[in-house]
Amino acid sequence: MIIRLAKEEDIREICQIYDLARAYMRKEGNFAQWRNYPKEEDARQDLIKRELYVLEEEEILAVFAFFIGEETNYKEIEGAWRREDSYGVIHRIASSGKKSGITRACFSFCLGKIPYLRIDTHEKNRSMQEALKRFGFQYCGIVHVEDGSPRLAFDYIGE
Image (cartoon, rainbow, N blue to C red; front, side, top):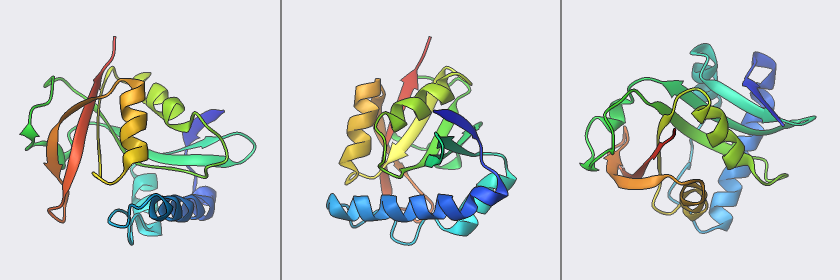
């Protein structure tokens, strides 16, 4: 498996993976998250900012957004981040479901860029919460996204 920056010609497959992820969430009982999001425009914005990555092995298996810098939604937290250092932010991880180990590969890739990571997820997204805990992320509190809805916030302190 390789991880690389997404390209314009990947957008169609990326949107298909978003659709698969939405269907998986519904199957798992998560009807609250990702109703009409992310959209093609979100992927294009991430692409323009060079923050959109794909994981592939003969075909695209997963997509995620990653950047190093300040996330506006993380400025206020009901709880506390474990560090105030520079950090990497992971958003919108979505998988085709065709292969296991996807989140671990994405997290490891991001850790290779910066040793402190932050991420948030919906309280109904049990699969992501389990993946975060398995990898070693720690729960830090609640943050609120653009529409005001709460998200569970986690961080990971690497070596």
